[in-house]
Length: 112
Length: 115
Image 1: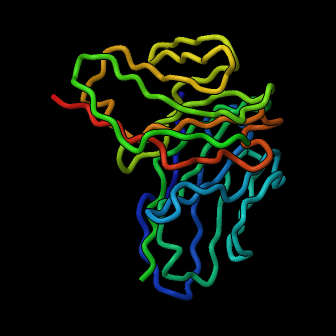
Image 2: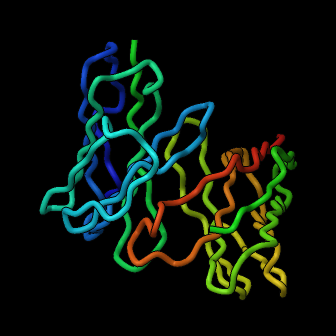
């Protein structure tokens, strides 16, 4: 079974731009979570989607948003990029009723 | 979710067993102990989880003390590829993949396997 895939793997943007990251979960997994990882703050939970609905949200500003499609694929969007948004963005998928999350390789975003 | 305490770093010789401790003295009765690891610049990888009984899978063993206030992850025959940051997480089993607030990662233990 293929793992979680994320595209693109690397991205360079400038301040003020917006960016969209994509995540394809493991086949059959309907829950997708997003995390941000920075050297200073570590791994932080952004939000989780299940059945196209955002179920949970971490403590991030409204510039961070996401959505999930009917095939469980998910996208996250960051608007008005700031230098501090430079990070590794990780997507994880899981099946309903379990807490075992399977992570993708991440998208490395650099904001200049 | 209960708070966990892990040593910031540990060394282990290749081929020996690596024993990674985790303290979770405030764990509640319905919280599970999960272990993930993150090899440099990769996404975290699930290793094992348990509630109160010891667990073993192809990757590792999890030993939980009887009072559940601490646990130990054991990698039986460590290899260089096991060099990673290991995270111990305790949480209530979520209604879906992420649970109420997603996984809460601490700083973990940086395990370095020495050749």
